[in-house]
Amino acid sequence: MQSDKEYEDDASPEEYVALCNFTGSGTDQLSFSGGDSLRVHAKNSAEWWWAELHGVKGYVPASYLGHGVPEGDDTSPEDPWQDEEYFGSYGTLRLHLEMLSDKSRTEAYRQVILSNSASLRNKVVMDLGCGTGVISLFCAQLAQPSAVYAVEASSMAEYTRQLVKQNGCEEVVTVHQARAEEIQLSEQVDVLVSEWMGNCLLFEFMVESVLLARDRWLREGGVMWPSSAALVLVPCQADSYYAEKMAFWERPYGLDFTPLQPLAQQEFFTKPKFSHLIQPDDCLATPCDAICLDMYTLQVKDLEEMKGQFHFCVAKPGVLHGFTAWFTVHFQSLERGGAPVELNTGPNSEPTHWKQTLFMLDRPVSVQTGDLVGGSIVLRRNPIWRRHMTVTLHWTINNSKEEQDSCQVGTKTFPMWR
Ligand code: J7C
Image 1 (cartoon, helix red, strand yellow):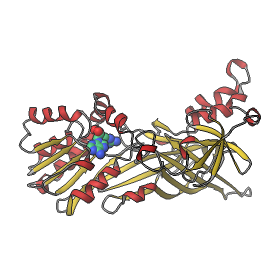
Image 2: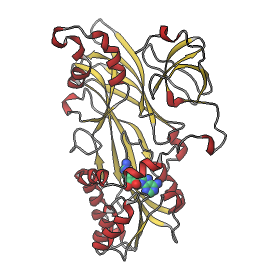
Image 3: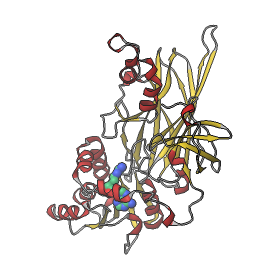
Image 4: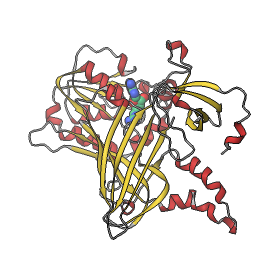
């Protein structure tokens, strides 16, 4: 990390305007509010710039800064949805193979269709973002819907059409190769089913497309699958990850490399680790649902900032390295007395391709049984890059046992990914 000194001679800092609020973590990041004018002295990396606000210098996330309010579409340099890249990545098999190989995910949707087959009879279904069409094919083969509209924007849709035919479902399933926002149907639908969940539930923000389709195409009283979703959080240990990325620098080959630790923190702990598989043993408390979404009432504007609270009682002594997040979704049953189906991506269920998301604190904290860990989580959608967000964690750790009454507080903001 370069020091402040190196930029002091910088003759022409660039003026930028903050597009939204940002809370810096540690001592080297600046906090600012939307509308603040900042002077950028150095563009150290694509993500972090060295900037100045009211005479104070620090690092700021580049994606939070712009040159004033954009005046029209043609002033934005790129597509904020990055659709070419996004749908391009779904035009090849890699991601579809990953999703289809995920048994918990795919079997959960299969179970939803199977256990509701009687209620699906003669119903009109939309499968939004159908990919290779597996959910639509389950519908056609396990139930008797009158029609299934399989909507897929990527070029995979051409193959999905072939798969529908190959499996003898072309009478029921119609593939629409289009963005769901742009489709035209001749009727409203009874059921809107979609597998839209991303990392930390919301990443990709495909859920926006689902909500728009709901408001446009779901008939009054129609069904949403999933019907609800929750972001789950737990305070956790991450011993081996910490050892691998941070403690490593303490004495490699008998040498003191600790001056590299601030760099390691910046490089490895700034963003969340998204492909983390937490062991149930590493959970320091009972997980809690921090944010719950009702797929019937959730609005697109709610997605800009989603807040939740958490309260944990530490269940065993250990080292708090951070927090791990995952999600659950529920599919309501349409059958009389039927049980809802749950897809749980947490550590006590079969691992899924989403795995879990680890948020590392800058410094580990020792905790004892009975300590109270409370706080809040805020998911803030990136004002420019609409598929991205930041996650801000705020925590308080209370040790009320013995005489050493202590309380530690902290805040950290993690970009995902811009
Ligand atoms: N319209 C049509 N297909 C979409 C849309 C949309 N607005 N958004 C995503 N998809 C497709 C995408 O091409 C891919 O096949 C699948 O939905 C994404 C599933 N991703 C996920 N995180 N569940």
